[in-house]
Image (cartoon, rainbow, N blue to C red; front, top):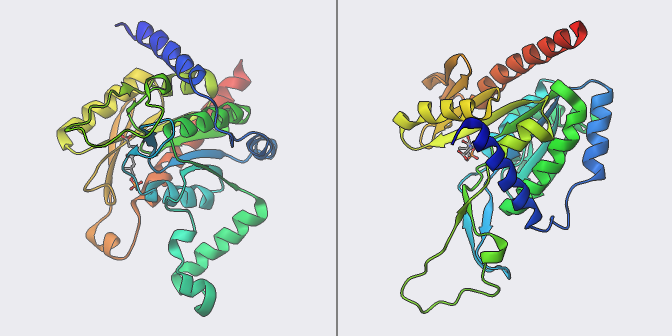
Length: 308
Ligand code: PAZ
């Protein structure tokens, strides 16, 4: 299939996906629009951060799910660093996954002892973020909820132009059971083996890039368990979608090392043994790199816009 055919095919599959599934009852609407409108108005850069894993229901009256691995640490830590860099953040997270700010604090600190000295700075940032209303949390559990919310938020973020950054760190299932192929009731036990038919999830980065928020700076993630696949897979994602960055990481080393790929090459970011022991986080380095590139991207878009 040519690149153009692949793109058209993906658009059709994405449209079919949304028309075959009801939007979630709690689909975000006015809150997101007014949050993004306010920050577009005061020219604050905006990051849409996705975090945690999606669940795939097996039955319509759901008893069982297929889960995607992810704790949500990457998304939560990245959100704090975006906020520290002056961004407003829509944090689209899996319910009950790791949360920005709260991940640092123990119940003892909240109720008894006051904040640990290491958390004082974090607490100050938290208060400042609350005062300036720069963090909006949106929760999801299933793949369907995740994609409906993402589409809604990304379309609304289009009003922020190239000040918007989409950072897709959630672990999203590649396969799902379409609603019309799902059992109505609980799949019964007792048979010797259970065979499930799963279909590929349409590649939503296509409409995100071309239709939902085409002016935004887009960062996707690639998780692998084999080093020799990482570079090729990350580069082919960049070629396929034509977006700005892919952050590649391996399951075992993801807390200490990542590779950032763009259309020209790659850089390796790594925590030294000393940094890791002292509690430094790789997200600090990732976000510095991402923010620098986003600022440059936005500046170039402004210059091009002025010249036209
Ligand atoms: O959530 P976490 O901190 O445990 O893990 C982060 C991660 C590995 C899910 C993330 O860095 C990532 O690679 N997300 C994309 C996964 C994918 O390829 O779908």
